[in-house]
Image (cartoon, rainbow, N blue to C red; front, top):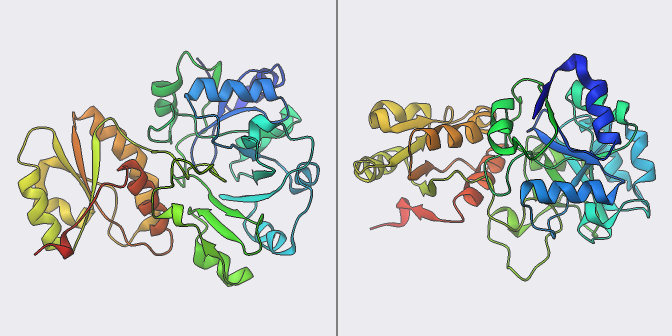
Length: 339
C-alpha cells in the first residue's frame, strides 16, 4: 500500500479514475473510496472489506450542486439540514436518480449522500471528477479506522493507496437521516445530533435499529443498521449502572486474565491498570473521538473480554451508545436491575 500525502492528491485521483480503490481521510473516519458511478469499481469495495452485499454505501460529494444528478428529488427539510450541516458529518438519504448503479445502493431506490468537511477529501473528489462511494476503510465488522496506522493494519495488500490526512477529528461515522418516507427518520446517530436536527426541522423518528438488533430477514436501509459492527477481537459487554455499581462489578470481573474495563476518566483511579478510559463522563465528543482507537489498543494489550461503561443516550452520547451496543452484539448487563 502506497502512503500518499497532501502533495500527492493528483495520484490518488488518477487511481480512482482508473477504477482502483484509494483510502481517503474524512473528519469522521477514513473512507475506502471508489468511483461511485462505476459499478465494477464499487464492487471492489465489498471484496476488499468483506462487506455483505446488501449493506448500502454512502456517496461523498465536494459541492452541494453535485447532488442534483444523483437524486430525483430534494425535499425542503433536507435542504435546510444541508445548508446548516454541509460540509460536515451528516448523511442524507433521498430517492436516487437513474445514473446511480445498484452496487452503491444495494438495490434500493434511495441513495445516501454526504459532503465531508475534511479539505483533502473534498479536494480528492474534485480532482477525480466523480462522486465517491466511501464506507469506512476497515475489514467489515472491525473498529473503524481513525488514523493511517489503523488503515494499514486492516487494508494493507487490499487497496492501492491511502492518503494521510492525520487523525480524524470526529471519530465515529456520520449521522444518517432519511427523507424517503413521510416523516424524516434517523437511521444512525453521529456528531450531528437528533436534538440539533429537530431544532431545525421539527420532530423526527429514531429508527429502532439505533437501539436494538435488526431482524435478519430485513434488508437494511442504511449502512450500520443490520450487522455486528465496530468490534475489536475481544468480546465486548456493555455494563449499565451508577459508578459504584460499575466499579464493584468490574473489579471482580477484571481479576481474571484477559479481562479489561473500558470506562470514564473518573473510573480509572478505582480500577487501576486493567482499565482504559475513552473519555470524561460528560464529554461525548471525546468519547466518540477515542472509542475505536481504544478498542484497537485493548486488542494490542491482549484483551479477551471488555466490560464497557454505558454512556448517556443524549446528544452525541447516542452515537457512542450505538457504536458500543453494536460492537457488543447487543450483549448488555444492567446492574441497576440486579437485586
